[in-house]
Length: 176
Length: 257
Image 1: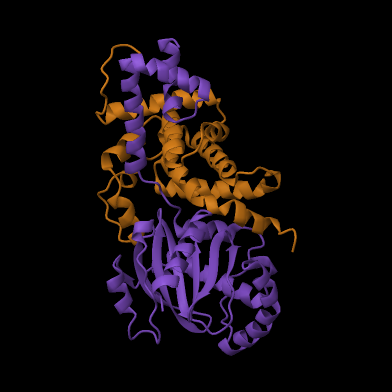
Image 2: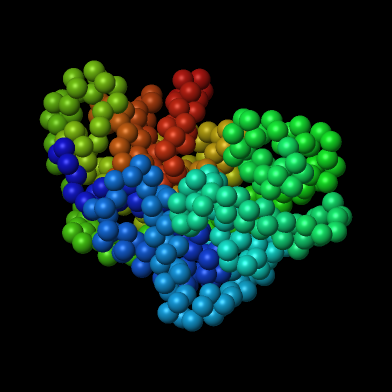
């Protein structure tokens, strides 16, 4: 079988990136249930337009669709501020019995988790893509549809806001 | 470089995204500018705290299953179990045919393999997915090989090796009993960067050859060491599963039965 069918190619090239997709969706929606909806919808779209995928990087392609799906979903819901903030998602209070969850919660720093969740969306998304997904500026620019210079300035601003919220600023200087 | 220009480039400097010329220019400026040095430290610390402290959410198995199920042309899950005898008879014939080819390459491609191998590969991956879905990854949850190894005694007619690979970045999570293709098998569960790895072990009964394959986006490696047959399955990114297997085979050469 020289040419596998689209379903098999999709499974091989796109589905391995479902963790990345879900992670980004969780941090965009800040709600696990909404993130599942967004990813499921995005995966359907991805498959629908899969014939148009000739690129090398399935992850960038899928994340771009996840992000677009999220923004469409926000518009339908009346703005990103309308998304329900899931306290449980970003706190360590709720015990979950599965070994996965236990492992996750052990190495989660509640302060960092909450500070990142509270960042304005435009900064939050680039910080998550850079620090948690370890994507390059070029990849982030492609996913978010913004220039590389904007990726840089938003990352700088986002990390600065985080440092302030975490009380971790050393340099004390007036004006920026 | 002017202070304001350097300041603008600091995030990219921290992320090592500058070209050499700009990076050197920024470094020169940092030598003389305390404010920018502090800024660099702040950026680095904030990034590090997110990396270490924020959760990277993994897709729930149910979501993965839902996405798979929604694909058109999705085959119904194989539930009928093939009787063991017929499998082995088919396998012997099929393996004889593929042996020369497999020997030549050492590792052969999944698609080129006969259907019995393919069936086992699919069953392994289905088992892996199920183990994540039903929240039944382990019967005995322990990161201690000296707890997991004795647990199998009396439950199986063989004693699986339980190597400790925590130092190498593959901590043990636990073990469970499972049933695969007519056999009881020992399953050791390891983890690598939050990806679970199922390691299946059973007594070898055929001239199995080493092979790697991808099934539905999952990575699968099978091999034989001593009197045992092994199969490792994971969704971990390319590279980590072969590394895991290489470590195991290294151990097998030294202290395994």
